[in-house]
Image 1: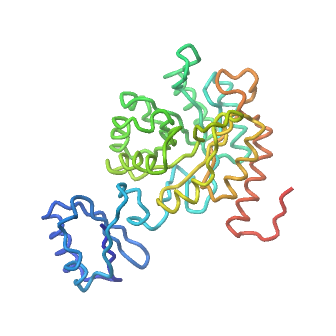
Image 2 (image 1 turned 120 degrees about the horizontal axis):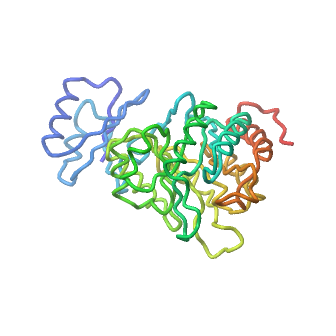
Image 3 (image 1 turned 90 degrees about the horizontal axis):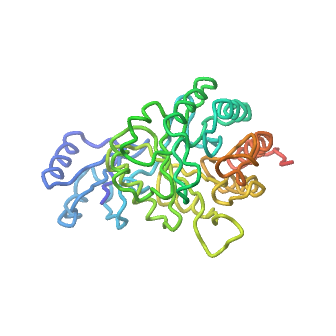
Length: 342
């Protein structure tokens, strides 16, 4: 249930309303907007008399919310969430480029790529230290050493770091990591999501391979309900009957999730397609569709990458793509009407 208050509500009446709701076991989440305050009521609201609340002088409207996700719901939080990481942000009309290799392989590799993608406009470095692989015989990442090298790259470039966490027990190792990524396979690892809800670190939550929008938002709800408001939704392709691409990129998720939720939405065209040649087109399409950012795999030598080389683009290709993406973003934002895409 949500309660929409009139502008400048009487503080005494508001305190009385909040106290009355909490006496009935209702958790109240206020959202203060520029012109209106919304009270999100979470709990068993079936016994709350809507007419009684509606009759109060300070109340403009009362609505029941049918969706099971409350904190992630745009009805509870009409303004877009903007997540700030260092000097950069995700959401709020900006286009955030997260780039780097699928996995950390050496200090020379990760620092070199970090410098290259930063020069091209990336504001966040990605790189895997712990790698969940389908085969137990595939490269599993450098683990703690990989985190150490990511922090070396951060020190060398100033870029915040995004890397994947696989288990709640790993949290102490990620103390200096800026964004905790939850991979598609862990989207419904609820014990991990609960643990991440107790932190305040931004969490990049990837959609599972067979997850609906509601499934994704309910996973986000676990983190939000724990008290961590810094959730970023990531579409990385879903599994369909098509076998030409690694997955099927669902670009309709961008307007859909933005209608359902206030959380920022970014796109991963690398995992979605599995083919480096398709990454630029899908990245451009995602920006044209209103994505808040992209997470792109960039490798200095894709042919010899230890993980996901076929879907990684080179630093030179990323540099060219970043310029095209910025032009598209300016058009989408309406900043420049004279931009010509070359």
